[in-house]
Length: 153
Image (cartoon, rainbow, N blue to C red; front, top):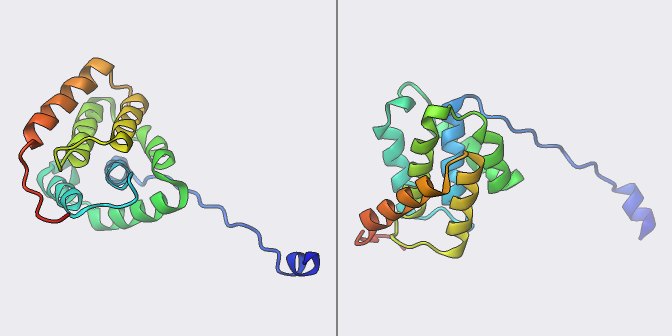
């Protein structure tokens, strides 16, 4: 076996990721929190799509390219690492907005499971959102999404 191991030895390819700009970082963070459970559900995709259309910060940006890049990065380095790499690109005045949208995406089904709790805590931490502010945002989003219709499950 040692013969074949040395003969077919491969060198792992390093994957380097850096967001192109703040908008790219927003998309990556949103995707990472939506896919934290291993899958990005239809309702989460719809919430992401609405965000890209509704927010003027994305005007003139190719959000589809950012989204595709986010999927690749999330697969290669994982959601938490992706969020950490992107957090530094978020302007201070946008951190609460990014966190609120993350909550909207994660809580789109009106439920908060353990993985979702952990990722929202993690995002609050890396974006330096106070516990008090994070709790306010989460409570409002849970109330807002309580009776959402789940079209696709």
